[in-house]
Image 1 (spheres, rainbow, N blue to C red):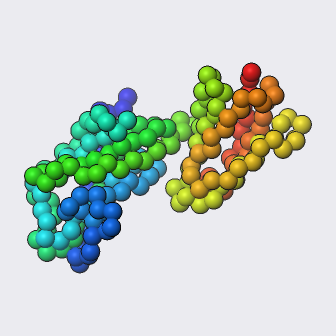
Image 2: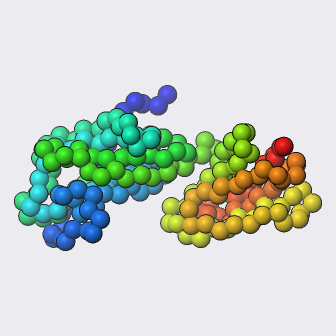
Image 3: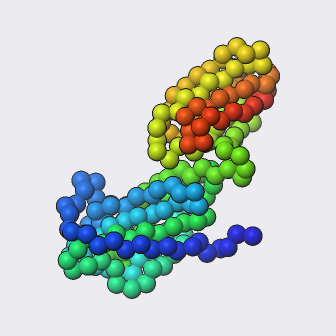
Length: 203
């Protein structure tokens, strides 16, 4: 059974002060990003030198509207001189869904919201989600480096039916109007190399 409390991992790095990014996530932050890990999503934020806050709270949402607190990091954060970077590992992000995060910097208000789609596979190296209403199919796979990935679909006779390219970690297929039958798909270039599977397309 999964624990209700995610593992908290904090890394503190001290570095010379740097200028704020153009798209500033918060007046005292120069960076707030989410990075996919094999064990979850790593949130990383940097407090610019000369700024401090009283504790940090981490919030997560499934829709970007209703947020719940998933971690509280007590104590003074930041430095009077140097930039300081912190990280929090969410070991149980919402699987195969968009995860929205924001921080409450104690005494300094909330950050902007960041969003990350987290792919999770119970077994194997990909997942297939089907919407029976419109016949759409989403194929999920690992592509943390966002390199180009190709996909080709053939029928059982080996005839090519569809192909596509992406730098994301999924392909969306709209199969309405396809002939009923079994199709074979090949995903080439993912973090797991070549991914192959079969899917049934109905009316």
